[in-house]
Length: 302
Image (tube, rainbow, N blue to C red; front, side):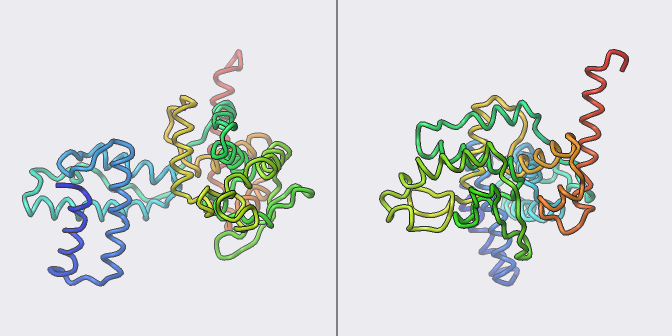
């Protein structure tokens, strides 16, 4: 059975036989569509009988790398388990692959980051000779220079970028505003993109003034987080980076690299837009662990 068909059948079961609310059914369906997209993109699987525990574990790992909270990932796993339990009872499948996948443990998870060299390689990968590649090149530079959330990056308005002062004004979670420096390299990348590429992308959609968004597509719309997530994975493969990667990993790397170079934790908290210093504190553990590893590898008497 096709995975999309299975999801439709499961949604019908939830509505007719279990009499769940529309909101609950919609939540299940969103989680399962996301799982189906992961299976199709990462493993080229669309048939439910081909799915095993590896695909489900990979889906969870991708969600965690994207920065989702453990409780959110656990909820999505519950949706996947519900689907396969339903398929097992209906004898569509012989075994339930989700039964072998453990729920993620709650607690603070130490984020994994890219090295300086991996970031440099990734940022140099997009083909700047084509408009989409030039746009992605600028987006990657802004993402690493500012530590923005991917939604904040995609929804960034052109008027919120002050090229003369060298900063961006960001509207983050809770509609809170923060000012984040761009840095010289990212500033040049944005300037080049605005001068050479943004107008070309919008040429058939009314020109540069047709949309307020900074990073746009040929359809005249802003970049979506899903599209950028796919692009960053594509560039990581081209750069031979063998770690799981997502836009949020560059945010983690931004914070960790700042702390490794002596930035104050409160400054990093402000740049990231964290309401609580405890949220930012996790990056000190990453930085300390990486510094110890470098010491052990390079000090002659380590």
